Length: 455
Image (cartoon, rainbow, N blue to C red):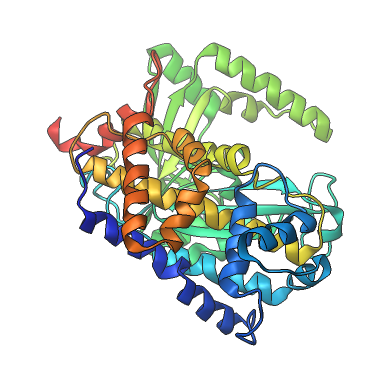
């Protein structure tokens, strides 16, 4: 990485302090009713820093540990019960507002290169992660799959800039399809939406189309597929046709669902071993539900089926699978959140304290991701083909650098610039994403869609 000027680093320090600086935290605390009197010894900024620190730890922090930390580091003496009493609905509103402001004020330049997926405004990738929570949260966070209580985190980001477009905590019983319907209004013209089958809904795809935006999705098996004359497509005949002629990939203009939504359907044959695995998995699933697998479903297992409204000039059929594979990055991100920050591992505590701590952990995650994204942007401006950071490696390092991050927010500007510069140097030196041999690689896919014009 080139040597960054103090001015460049200073801008990033100011960006982080804009939301998490003491004055802004005090302002948000007053707006949400968390702070009612300035003389209260546990100020908004001290409370936030205490929770921020607790969220950086691998283990859960008891109230006893927290009051001990307050006394030893801030010379503030407070009883455990008094600290516990600070966790109210207003406290939740306070940390929610911090998260909301953090997302709204984030860095938004290109993440990798200006040419990357240049035909789209945002490339919106969304998924959710669900986990069970203590049963005392069941009243407001109902669970699924036999669990009394559960939480779902809905997360959406822009693949082009790294921007966080949505980060919402909901009860686990609110499924992805409901989320897709309720958030369809967030889509903008020329956005590209990539999601898994849990979000699949013909009505939502129709709304995306009406907004002059784009989608790429797997086709749900139960969805009716018709040719342009309204005749249902026979996938048994299609399989026979492609097999006999040695065709492994094709595309058709079709209509889907009762609304007969016009889309491009791309059809790819899977290898025999993949087909056999799918059949075994599907048979096991159907048996558990007490159903018998339909003949149509058996033939659908031969295919990778995708639907999109992007024309073939912008998205050739041979690149659809590669583009869809970017969706896996969000699942890897959830894995990192759980393994590094244990967002799913909070102990049993009263609801307002639990939700406060969960929001603070997400704030810590986003602060770290913003630092990584800024480092990635600066690297990308040098035009190095291999200069793609590993989120897994970088997040682990930043977790172990908590006090440096806190120092960026609270130290003098001169020291904060030095701390952030040191972090950038470490990330750029040791945290590259490794290439995987004999497999389609994330780095290769980035450049496949970054330099289409150079073919």
